[in-house]
Image (cartoon, rainbow, N blue to C red; front, side, top):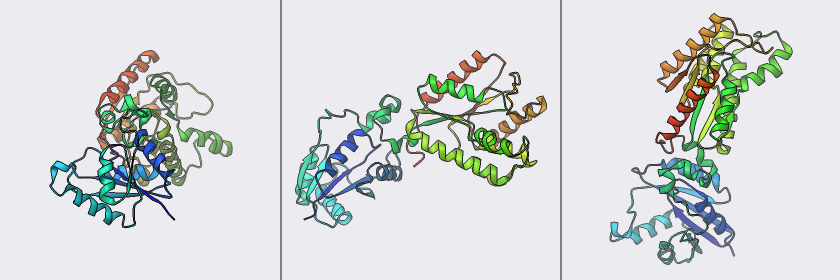
Length: 341
């Protein structure tokens, strides 16, 4: 005989306490249903929470209920009847066990004709709460369910001409803020493919550059759950769009559109005040070319209305310090929760 389990919650956002309940529940039933409940006036997107939970608990059937319903028994005299009918509509099959992390689970189970299993109501195993996380994401980052991290993470992306220290600065910031750095995919593509077949800067096509930008974005998305509250990125599609114009002689419209679809939260634009270092791979070292790269990146940032700081001067230590200050300012800003959901 199949046993069915059920639990509901806001999961705002999903954290290790929620996943502990879900994982316990799935070990006690044959089929588990998780109902993500949301309303219009909540601070985290309901759609985002549904998608995060779907990814976080792949062993369960995850449903989304977005409806303006009473949230507490004192909100409506028919509170329990309303919720009983809503749950029966979403889950018409008989429910054997209702799982919850709070005492309301006893009454809910009674309404549904099921047995109640209340897991860690005093939060002895995991003390984090959704409210605490929303108030200070960085302090509770390790408790956040991995699929939800992109919705609360800040992205800091570094742009600029060649030989201005983008990769070195990205690595420095990643180490300083104990997070991950997304390396520049374009350099790897150029070094290990293009320059092994053709002369530097030749035989580039629009298709090459689109695949380069798409691969970089996919790698960034894969790295995001493994990083901290701040993800450092060495260039993005805006930089690739600048390279496209340089290599092809004109902007690539598809890439320009792609560059504006998912921008970073803040950019550091590095000025070409640092000496040119010919490492055998670079090939855009003429002073006028470096100045053009800077101006072309700045023009795109301005056109898209994006937030950025210019990191200028030839003193590497000062450039590092200015970048650290910008990163600290970004981390201190409130998060638009669920913005990527």
